Amino acid sequence: MRDQHPSFRSPSATQLARHPVVSQDEWTRQRIDLLEKEKELMRLQDELSATQRALPWVKITKEYKFSTPSGDVTLADLFEGRTRLVEKLAERDDPLGSAREVIADLSERDKLEALNAHPAIGAKKLSARSAAEQGGDADPVVLTELAYLNQVYEEKFGFRFVVFVNRRPKAEILDVLRARLERTREEELNTAVEELVAIAEDRWHRS
Image (cartoon, rainbow, N blue to C red; front, side, top):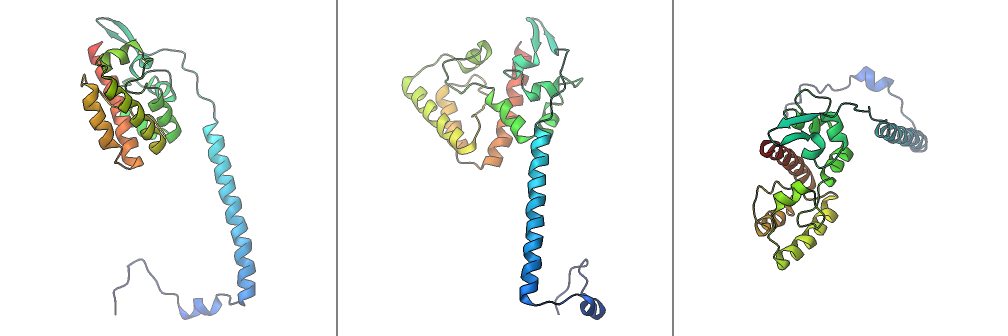
């Protein structure tokens, strides 16, 4: 006799005797009724989720700024725009130190907003910080393939390819992009938000 799971308890004869037994037609009717209730529950859950996502944000009246030798730097400077992530970080005493914790609690929609705020690698229109980070090497062949693979990446994962360039040439970033295209969406989303924080930390240290 095989060992049973400790939490498993076989129904007693009394319990079996009390459980209703019906015809196939009656079971089908009750199952259809239950299915309708399950559908209604799913609809209400979707409606609740939509309502939660539509909740207004609390307006942040105080802009968080870092004082650096070269002047004040805002969170929007570090994260490439004012997103929900930036709004949440502005509420913290140590925004960069708690960035990973805050990101972990964000909805996927808010994570994607933060990622998509960053320009694509090799894009023509860049902020001053992004332009300095990405460098000026502009091999047309590399730029063409970057543009193509950026598009493939976004079509596959549904968000922008974000990488901490760390002053590497675009040809090397191209190899990184090829490798990351082989990953699962979950793996890539986790990697992308981690790269997002690494970029912000580097911008702060170099300001």
